[in-house]
Image (cartoon, rainbow, N blue to C red; front, side, top):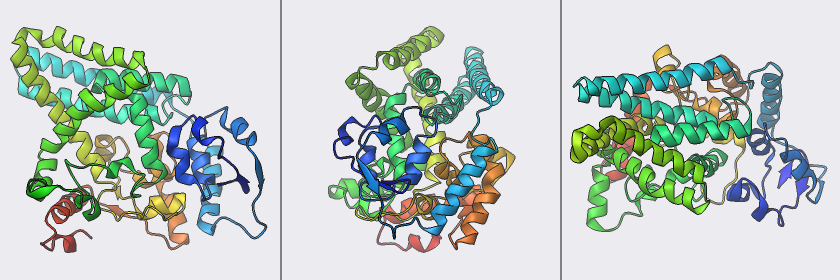
Length: 397
């Protein structure tokens, strides 16, 4: 792979790469932008890189013009302080989810269990947004501290594993919408966002399920199943495999605290409340994540494209507005987030015009749509994928 104009032999390093198998996604390609943006806060990455065998790239080789201008923009934004964390903003975000959880608990204790479960469910979803920043090391900028904050927020707030999330989510960032490498496309048998994935459906029952996947997804059924599968199978299984006992402790403490708060309802009542609360939180966050990529086309397994083109061709922004910015925790700026994953997300609205100007200069699409339009095209795409005999696809553009 090429990094900063040098060809590196990583054959002996692949298995030792601290970030795992994600390094394989860049083999045979220019990995400069991926390297810069994944390792921006690492003090060890450059030392490891320079220890590997390397040689200068061929004299005729140069990055494409878009990538060159992107790197200039990244360095300008770094110089201007846009990658520096704001601890007051982090404190506000943490206080917000604690306050929302407390309000939800008080409502349930006062007899308004339906409203309380909705408020607590939204708090759970907002813990998902918050831990996302921790996983990208954009809370405090200190990798160790942000990892611990992520484990605590995700374990207590969502019952899930930060280390598993990082393992999967970084792969998504490296190659969004690429078949065989983006875990967000590996969604069967519950849901299929592309016709190629839908081809994995087994038998008449599998196809019948996909035919109803749009209302099942946005109606909360599929999102709830994913949430329970993550909470009780995939995430604790990974934490056990890597022996992350601290994360397991956070996840266990979550259920202890739930029992302390709602054990008075009895086992069945407590479980019903928990199921509804998880359904609210899972539907909130999964539907909002889905609107950014899933209706876009996929990249073939053998094709390499640049870091910038992944963001341009396979990502959609939702329109900038105070409510949507809060509701999606600034991840309505998915283009900016994919270009600069280590940047604190509240800076995305400020830098968005400069990103748009960069794309327009190079004739590259900058796809931004109203929030409800993003939901519409995502819903119609699910209908089209699940019902290929109909012509829903003509309404997804």
